[in-house]
Image (cartoon, rainbow, N blue to C red; front, side, top):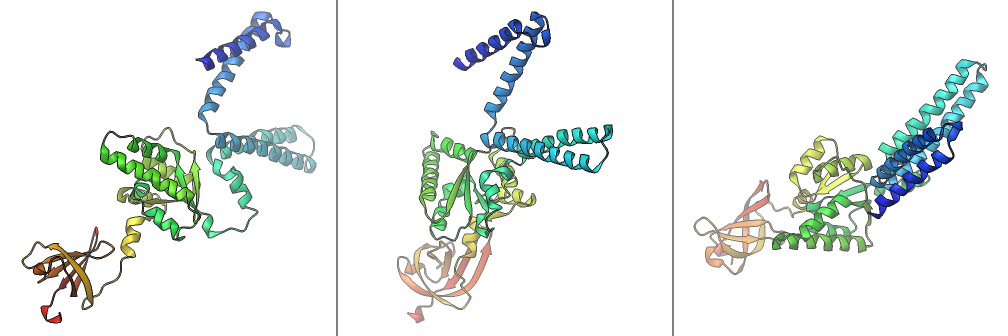
Length: 329
């Protein structure tokens, strides 16, 4: 309410200034109309600026200023090499108009190019570890990314977007107890990652108000930052890859890092429960891989040595089949 009143005061003052100090010797009422129109334009620009991120304003200003300097420089160079005539004047005006316009567009649409860290990076030796990796909601709630960061295998900067933080907060405030627990776990994971000395993090204020879906926003942010997306979401992985965005899927990494077991090897397992078939028992390796063992139902609750008979790769991971030989005990 106070901002609305302040805007009305500004409009009234500029209108009165136009009436009492009419520009260009115009009649007072014409000056008041001009002042009113100008004040409306200023208030409109103010509302637009309030909705625009500071990074965009900064980069647009720098881009426009650089365009003015470049346009002036190109016009001056052309004037020194050509005769002074109307064509030369037109070329100079053309450069002075088109270059600031292009600079403004670059600053507005590719604002990350004009960020101070990005500009300073041109004066530093480029490093593979300077790439951006954007975290999505699923990988944050999963939590394994925090352990991965602690091992120092993750290089570059982890980007946490504001719209992902907002989604996490909504989940943490949910009336559903399970969702609330998952959301709070995600916030704890982010806190752990930010405090980790093994990885650098960045909170991105970039948003895309015209896009409602969080996954689509992540894809657009990855395009703007030339970044990779870190996720556990299968659908997001496929959509991002179709658009040429590199994706790091934690589930795929976990499957690749599971220990390799070959048929004929002997391994020790703990029979946890009975299987679906007769005399079958079920065990699990330390990484969660299911092991189905024939002739082991009577050995539930015991550690036994088994012989691996086959390994099956499924969409959810590996399954190991083995046989328990009583004679080997």
